[in-house]
Image 1 (cartoon, rainbow, N blue to C red):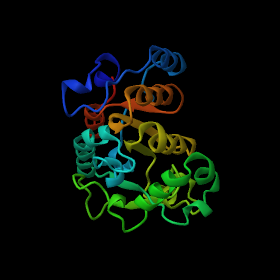
Image 2: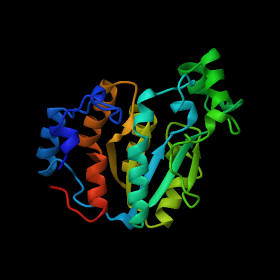
Image 3: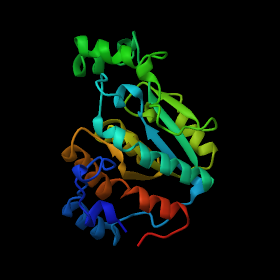
Image 4: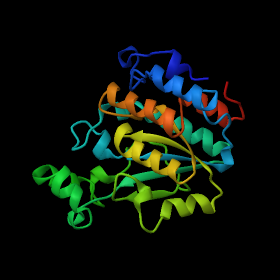
Length: 248
């Protein structure tokens, strides 16, 4: 069942709670059906073996006028909080992933800071996401609990960490499925989701709990991910499966 992902196309102007008009391409649906006989690869969610990875929902991405503002990210906060609450209640794990850079970061990631983001833009980005800066903190409306782990990353994906902190924590906790939420859909969220899939975690991107700069980029990521890497469902469907339901 993909009520808000495939069959229903919702305009963000219709409700302040909707971040994107979600449209999975027919090609992605057709390829998924041809490859596995159904759209979604994972018919169930076993909550106790599942982690919600919430990516980069920091003040520097959500605050109006912030250095890396993604306006749509503010609209997904309620869905992220619903997912976190539902998964915790069912015995699952919620992990908050945060970007941490700062002066000197260019020494560790020279390609990115010498060629991709350079000059004043790089300086502003690194300073904003340095530890201790207001922009580095989680957005104030998010429901993070004291028992929720927080993992810092200095790349687009936490799985790039040579120490494998996130992967080790997940495996030691018996996690074999991850749900991906946060921002930016087609950058850090996509990188995290693909890396999780490549490390043999059953991976699902939550369509209406991710946010990008525009619908085109958001939907391109979801469509490609569905056909080649994992699942794409909405918050309501995820909560139904967490509660013990089975995908249609």
